[in-house]
Length: 210
Ligand code: ADP
Ligand code: 5GP
Image (cartoon, rainbow, N blue to C red):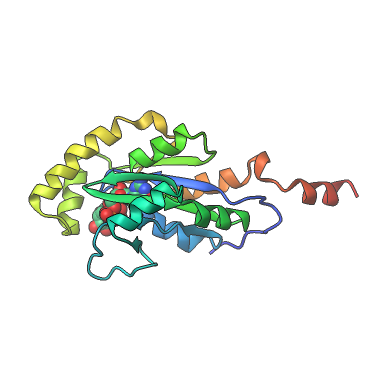
């Protein structure tokens, strides 16, 4: 785990990561949270039912449709979308609070979410994770063993549409060899930390122009 100097960074990054289902987004993002001490997931709200092993407040905030719609009308979401028949939303206040503390926030979202955030003009880093091929994607969905045959076909159809939206993204990472892809994503985060607009001007002046 890397320890980053808190004074180097002003606000946490907003890192939106999308991928066709099965490309390895979860695997890669979990690795990033292990490699960067100050990188956390934003916990989305969803109307989807919890899967076995999923914990409320840890994997998602699980809510009913009425509560979700109320939150939409209150402006509680930075973005929200209907994905695979359920609603998902990114909580605005939690994201902003983490960024204010200099914590990088990972948004695990679908391509529609990226499109919305882009259209709002929110400054962020937009990454697309791709499998090396359609066949490999199918194999990973089958091997993962979480979805029925019909569901896998549905996810593959959606995948093709999502991949066509490649222009929405700043970075495209092909997840063929897992460690190689993890190193690339790690490099993207490190490079974004070094951007001039992430340097705390107060620290900079104090350190070099006493
Ligand atoms: P996503 O979150 O994008 O739906 P997952 O992280 O759940 O995808 O990965 C889908 C499946 O593929 C999992 O079984 C995971 O262990 C496997 N996987 C992820 N990356 C690789 C890789 N580079 N090579 C082989 N298998 C992988
Ligand atoms: P799952 O139900 O498998 O956890 O997630 C289904 C899809 O919804 C994934 O592509 C995931 O990235 C996306 N998703 C999860 N949270 C959000 C969110 O807050 N907003 C959007 N737009 N998509 C989300």
